[in-house]
Image (cartoon, rainbow, N blue to C red; front, side):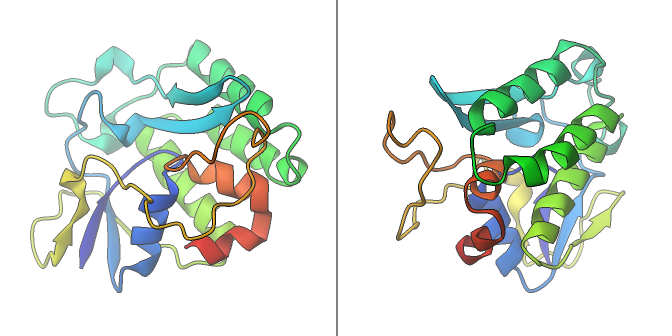
Amino acid sequence: MEVFPAVCFPSLGYLRALASAEEAIIDIGEFYVKQSYRNRFDILGPNGKLSVTARVEGSARKGESVKDAKLVNDEWRRLAKKGIQAAYGKSAYFIHYYDDIESLINHAVYLSDLSVGSIQFLLEQWGRAIPAISETYVETQITKDHRTRRAFIEDDIKQPYTQVFSDRFEFVADLSGIDVLMNLGPAGAEFL
């Protein structure tokens, strides 16, 4: 079994690794790691790459699990939605997916709600299986542990897709799955 961290709106590299795993499990029982990609995602906006951070209450107490890390109910939600609107408002699939993404951001109470919800949402759009979720730390029967990976770099894209701001920037890899979804819609499944 391959164990994955819970990551909000994960990168295409993460989604590829998850979709290609024979048996995958997302561990929301692991300790929340500050300044990690567990509560951050990158999108391509009109001014370049934009990192969006889902703020966690009290920066999460030491030893707190991802499932217990409560999201702050402040400006980050508004800024995340504005960033996504600015980045993808003119994309072909914005109208089809934005309401669901906005709902995920608005209604998530815990980091695990946002992470698991966004992973499930993205995989469902591309007809991929939803992995199992573990609320307790996974320690046994692990064939590959992705929780310690710093990033899931998607360096093997053979044919970059057209991004909204391709007139301003060369292709930018390692963005959130939102980028592929907004630019390619259902056809994004071929990149998994």
